[in-house]
Amino acid sequence: MSLINYITQIQFDFGAVRLLAGECERIGIRRPLIVTDAGIRAAGLVDKVLDALGSSAPMPVFDATPPNPNEAAVRAAVAMFSEHDCDGVIAAGGGSSIDLAKGVAVCATHEGPLQSFAVIEGGLTRITAKTAPVIAIPTTAGTGSEVGRGAILILDDGRKVGVISPYVVPKVAICDPELTLGLPPMLTAATGMDAIAHCLETFMAPAFNPPADGIALDGLWRAWRHIERATRDGSDRIARSNMMSASMQGALAFQKGLGCVHSLSHSLGGIDPTLHHGTLNAIFLPAVIAFNSSAPSMREEGKLGRIAQAMGLDSGDDVAEALRAMTAALGLPRGLAELGVTREMFPRIVAGALKDHSHKTNPREASGADYEAMLEASM
Image (cartoon, rainbow, N blue to C red; front, side, top):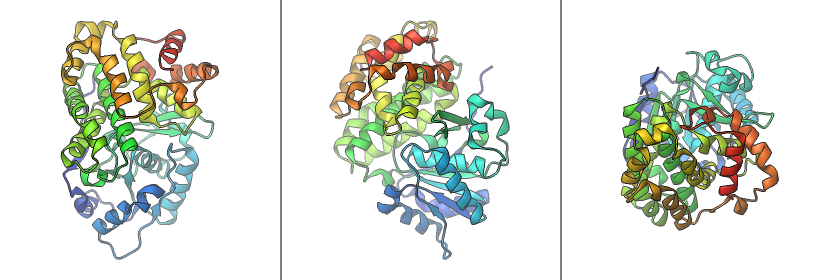
């Protein structure tokens, strides 16, 4: 049975952040907790959010989101949420801040530790409509978490898990490309490749969802044509707008599921939280696409050819190499070895990948040996 469901109200335009106060009023948030990180606050973007709220009263701001959000940060933010009697969360930042905000929205309104809400722990059924409403304001163009139904968080035991539920989806996404104009080139490149990975993996996932397939392919088309422009010239408004759209579109298609790229990057990111998720996705994509190419659903629906068409390539056989070339052209690391990953880490990475929720929605089932081969090809 396929589930086709689009529920987030999206405000998309330059200057859209000015709509924040009206959106808070519309969904009933009167005492928000703002969740962000120190870099976003230092860049002055939190001030833009506060100005848009227009309140004379001071707003609580949690700005200690780590690059890979974890259970300890969720607890600290929940304590601030409770202390100020908040009734909703406004996330301003990249995927880390938005995912942390989702964790806060769940844990501030439900009994139990974060672990109990992880999908691999049966958490899907434990998350209810009591979840606090979230408004997400992305300041990067990569994760698409502003419209996603899940949050990726690191537990106290080191596992990187998904907290997934329809109740976790933000009530509102305010996608203002103006907030991404100051994004540094390498972060633009890494988050942009994350968006490309999302569009590719959701399209390859075998679930029947033609609307999601169309959204993912259009997102891929936009990202592939504009990622170099956005990286080279951060003030290019057309490129920034298209990259933000591609990021949002990839996540709208998440309901189809992801695949081995993400099961590997989630596992490795849990082992070494300093590694950037988008960079890992870029490195893993060629090996996973080569592995997936023989899957029945890929062949029967001509998916590699359709991917190639969206990327402006002659053949599906060119996709993997084009991704390697793009990663190099953007100046990103081209292999795991450049990141300090060693073959001695492979058993732990494989064990985590096999348990990851994305493993189950890959178009071709991967064994431990298959994952080892993909890791070796990605070194």
